[in-house]
Image (cartoon, rainbow, N blue to C red; front, side, top):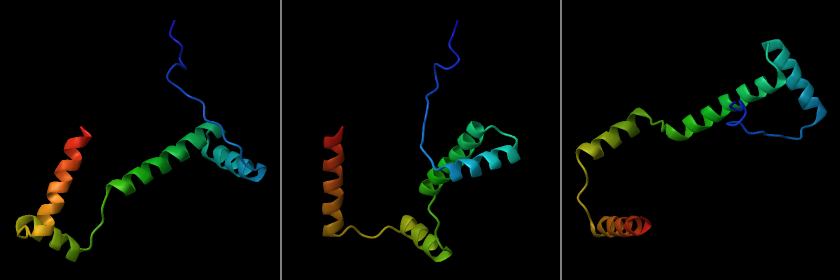
Length: 95
């Protein structure tokens, strides 16, 4: 028989009693156990942090500049050529 907990891990934290009481009240008000409430809240915040790191917000002017540079890339100068060469060398050595 398969163990239903084989794909789970335990996370523990020490918190002040007043924070525990606040969390318990919020859990009760939302109809969840304290554990369920904490997991839901932590997961919601984790997804927000991940999304915030993946999305780049630009003003309309900045977005126009980015698209303009994509459509009309600048001529490669010596510094840009050196940076491109360094980038390729670095990443070819990494693999």
